Every structure is written in C-alpha cells, then in structure tokens.
Length: 559
Image (cartoon, rainbow, N blue to C red):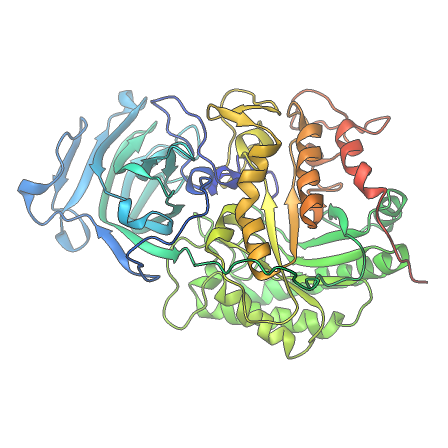
C-alpha cells in the first residue's frame, strides 16, 4: 500500500493498516477508518440471530423530541433542518473553539451484532468546516466500543470538512465478539464551522460463516506454480530490465506487478476512454516485464492497482456501486487474459488491489467479492488454467478472512496484506487515506495497546487467514507486507512475519522494490527522513532478513 499511513484507520481502515485501534489520548480518538475498523478479534461462532447482508440493524429515531439524546455539547441542538425538513443534529463550533471534540454520545447495544461486519452511515451537510490537522478528525459520525481482546475500536469516515450539501458518509467495522459499551458519536473534532448530521444507521455487511473442520489428510492445495515456494517483491512503478537482472542476482523468484496510478486520490479513473488509453501503455509495459521474468526465472502476479471508476473518499471502489465501471472491470480482465494466457512467466491474475466497500451494492451489482467472481468467471471462459487471486474487503485485511467463504471458481488462491499494527509499520508515513501512526514511536518487539507486540501477537492477528486455509485447503499468498525503514526493529518484524509465512506454507511478496524509498530494503538504515533515502553501501538489516529466504528459492529461467 503506497505511502500508507497508519494503514489503518486502513483507512478506513487505515484502519490501522490493518485494522487496529491506535492508542490515543482521551481528547484524540484514533483514526476511525481502517485500523480501528478492523480490530483484531478471535474466531468465534456467528452472531445470533443471524442478520442478512444489507439489513438495517439500527436507526437513530428522532421522531419524538422527548426521547432525543441529551447532554449536547456547546453550540449543538436538534433541529428540523435535515433532508426534507426532517430532524437532524446541528452543531456550530466558533473560530476560537477549534480545539477538542464536541459530540453527542448515543449508547448502542452491539451485543446482537457481535462477530459481524457493519456499515455505519449517515447524511451530513457542512458550512465552512475548517480542515482538521489530521484526516480522522473533522465532522464525526463515529462508532466506538470496547473489547477486552482487541482494545477500543473507533470508526468514522475521514477527511470530512469544507462546504457541501447533504451527502452520505460511511465507514465499516468488524464488531468484536466481546464488544461492550457501544456508542455512536455525532459532532466535530479539531475544526470549526457548522455541520448537520441526519439519518444515522447501522447496516449488516457480513455475517461470520460456520467453518468446516479441517480435513485430516488434505491433498496438496492448488497454488498456481510447481516451485517449492514463491518469495519475492512488489514491483517498481515502471519497467526496467536491470531491475529483473538485479532481482535474479538476489535469487528472487516472484514479482507482484502493480498496474496502478493515482494512489490516495478520489474521483479518478472515471473517464473510461482515457483509462483504456493509459491501460494500453501499462499492458505493453507488462509484456516487457513478462519477457524479463521468463528470461530470469521470475514469476509475475498481475495486479490491477487502479480499478475503473477509482475510489470514493472513504476508499470504497466505485465499481461496486456503479454498473458501467463494474462492467468495464470485467472487460479489462478479459483483455488481459486473452493477451497473456499461456505465458510461462504469468503466475496469477490478481483481480483488484485491496478492495474496500462501506455500503451495500445496489441490486444487480456484485459487491467487493461478487465483482471479483464476475471477473474470474470471464477469465475462466478464456483461460481455464492460470491461478486467480482473490483479495478480501477492508484493504485486504487479514482479519476479514473470518467472514470469507471460498468462491466457486477453479484454480483460485487467496491473498492477504500484512501491515499490522499500522501504527508501527507506518510510523511517520503520511497517507491521504487517513492512515497515520500515533504520535509516539513504536518499537518491535515491544508493546502495543498495552499488550506485547511480538511474533505471537502477529500470529494471532493472522489467525483468521490460517483458519480459512485449513478449513478449505486453500493456498495463501501474502501479497504485501512491510515496515517503514526507520521503524525500530523493522528487520525483526520482517523476520518474524516471514517465519510465520514459511511455517504455514504461504507464498509472499515484500512491499516494495525500488518504488518509494521508505519501503526500500536497499535504502540505508537511517533515522526518519521522508524525502531522502540514500542507498546503503552494504546489505541492510531489513535486506538480510528477506535474503535469508531468497537464497532458498528455486528459479527456472527460460531462454
């Protein structure tokens, strides 16, 4: 994830890149999107009663003035100024009152929805709301709960400020199995101006499935290649033959080849004619990369990093909400399959990088998983053999594997990304999706959210992926994992991550090679500096952690 800040609140998660609630002072709730939204939870039985996807679980009822929540902050009131003249919450923070959080807190019993993924939604309107200092502040429609197993969870859409008419705000969250003290907070934080919030709801996005018991002696899982293991890197942003020669010298045998642009930007990829023209050039570049991969014995996973339609401000992919972009997504994969099927360097088709969806799809449209299934079926009509990689919701968060069921498509592998905790892996990285590390520096191994942060903590965080693998005899790929180069103990973090991947038989590609210097294992192990990344004169500690495994790779160059 490029320049992904805390990944987490990844984003919306930012969601702590991976889904974890960041430690925050009482007056500064953590990034609502990602990290928080994807708090780690232990696998458990589905919530009862089982709700259906798209069902409205809870709605703020403002019809009876006598029953409206009290204890309003200064400058706030309930007013008949919502859409269509209906009741809404209105708050004004004067220019001299920007510091602090001004919210009304509405208790919500989350017990019936433990173990579910829910969407928090509302209508909001803003008049001159100033830009807050961090992305997760601003206008707040935020879900909060406590969890003994996962810590506090905070979720809201980030970067909400300015002047705009009524629009929908959304954020998704995994409700921990032991969630308590649920509440929805409406208001503003660290900003000034006037905001109105109405039609607040919680909607079911996913219900945890029942898992079959692992088979006693399962056959080898399909993995899309005949090598003992694929270990490699995410690609640079452009092709250079020398990069492949250098990777071969390191004995790398896999590259996740990213086809992307406009990372962190909203409203892009809307002009499909322009998008296709750009994609044509990138596919020509991919053809060169595949030939270099064939020559050097390096397999490529083809990764669509920028899907047609782009993303909304909360990270949601436009193609899960708008038919033209969904149809075009399927068509581009038909193009790719026709052009590259049978190439010896193609390892897998990675359908879409880090899906995000915070509201249900309209009737007739595939959701974040359904759109991948549509594309996979179209590919299978052209190429029945090449592996297809499925990613999960919430920025391909490992925790979301707890809600995943296998797709009915042959020769499928499943992919997760590992940036947990984002407050560690992304410390000092600033990302427009709202991911941002907490103020203090974290070390690895160390302590996070008052709990040990070590290999066993990483293992627990990845457990939903392992459970899915064993239940369905599925092959797993970690398509991205990293720690920014100045994170204390980054080499230990990478060593512990890869040790777990190897123990479980997972293929993996490190993020990233010669893309941004903060992720480069070739950049010197120097203190924080986002702009300068001098190349080390000898292998860095991070490089050594990866190369310990690269040396074990098998490559099969073809003349």
